[in-house]
Image (cartoon, rainbow over all chains, first blue to last red; front, side, top):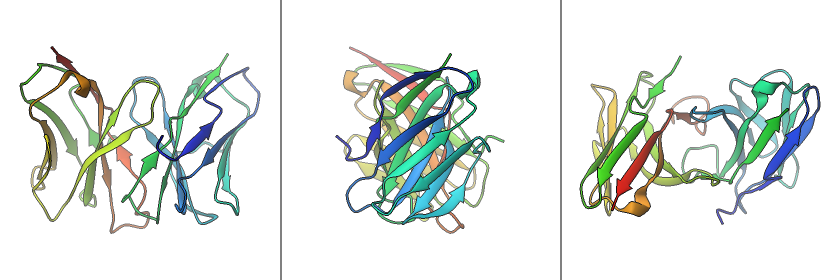
Length: 113
Length: 115
């Protein structure tokens, strides 16, 4: 158990729908990161929150949004889903805004049908 | 624009031999490099890292080498064990940049160690 909890583990939904992925960071970590891994691809950085504020944005679609709550858990919202959004979505956390001490969760596998 | 590349999708080695996984990068702002190991149905697990002020870092059976002039790093596993079979990702960070925590990943290399 890495200490980073992602729910749900699996999600199957139809095109056009909206889903919310949840991440609880490791205790004490202030930064939360979201990554997308499509088939046979590396992990693509989506967005980072640090202590409740957005810190960095990657190649995140406008249909996607995220937030970090006061208790530091984070949610990634995906709307108007398309078949190409099917992927593994990983959350990671770190103590500060730094690549040191990065810990990944086990991911949410999203399948859009 | 693939800033971190792992050009070998797969590597197969015999147990007890050396495994060498390679990674190239293009962004000269990268100054911290990491290797992650990933098993199916699990998240990536940190393996070893190296700062750009060093050219080598060792941790048990794992050694990472960094050649800044060539923008190339490699991970050596000696001796290789069947339990090392996994996908290995190279990642890079620009600690001196505006987003210190953002990691840029390579596509991964599937390592298979045969008994």
